Image (cartoon, rainbow, N blue to C red):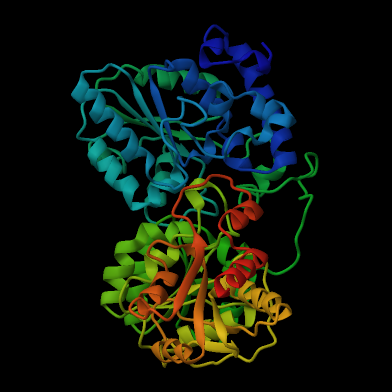
Length: 585
């Protein structure tokens, strides 16, 4: 059977084991061809080929439901459920997302891009089935890296109490994005070493039934295991050992690099496009390593994404005990950082913008209420960052700026970021969050302060009249560009770098009333509940001052075009300057 003939899982159910094995080989070739040209999650999906085929061979689509966590391991599932052309025809490569998406196919039950949620979501399907008296089987596929997240523990805890069929497949490849960390993984190793027979068993401790598959890339072993649990009348964990990157030697040898990659040479595994310009991750890691050498209390923390803050394997080795990977557990990371800070240490937790929202309670309760002087760096918090619907980075200003006690800083460039980072790590009074600029690293020739103790003081970079442009973080440059365009039209605008997103500089705002009648705010976040609204509220009772806020619409978008969204939200310098000229008329 040709891959292009597979329109649904029903098309593989009549095949024998040898034909299925051939199909797996063809799937792996097609995956490698697409990923080498297009990029994507390489290792997770190469390791999942046989498991995905076996699941759809044994279980009955569309009646039975499969939930993938994290769903970046669902490429083969997509191939088997009507989206094969997106993996075999280069013209169709962009027609599917990198995660499960119900808008693409009813085979995708949820849009999932954050880890550790799958068991809980699938458990909800089980509960709904039981309430309605249904008979469908529910399968959750969860990676071992996902087990470090607290919700995975909660999901397993509740799963043990549910009645009826519920199959929880643990894909254990002994890796998260980087190596796994935490006591849980010692038990997974013990189970692997004892062929699943160790008396100490994490899953059985919940009261869950348990099966072990040592050869998770062996099709017959998987089919036999899934057939055995297919009709059980109670929840069961099927612990499957797979090889991340299976079938592609470079991905097997370098699992961290090939977790997700850009296009690469399919023969050598060499990346085709290597950007050697520094990013804010590299800048952060190099700076923290210098701090560590001078101060043994400095600690870098990651929640399973060390590459985000530039801590390569070599840098992790150099940092030693001054680097801590808590696994994919942002709540633990924020609380740990808060505890380290209160204990006299100097913690820096670097996190992706869309991931920090999972630790909102810890930001508020553990860090802010307790006044723990930890420093958190928010990466990719920008419309210029990641553009998958589950990884949007434009909600953090509204999220964090409204928590009391936190000093929320928005640097405009490399030099200002490092000045703020130095201050945050040095001071002992405030929880500090730094929202790194979006896009490429920019350098400034301005002189920056080294002391931010006097809170909420804005920096007036250009002094003009009539209109004041307040551009926060990433969009400070846009404000400067707008000022240049206005100058060409004979308007000398004031340009302000607010620096602080957590409070208002009332003195500066009040002074603008003397010779300005328009204040424009530009922010890299949603307008609703954002920073610009705070400026507008300040002037709300003053009928003489107009305020115009620029930012993003409160909306979920998926794989948006960055240039298009800037234009749609009137965030280009040309649009803003034209709006201002119209308003001043």
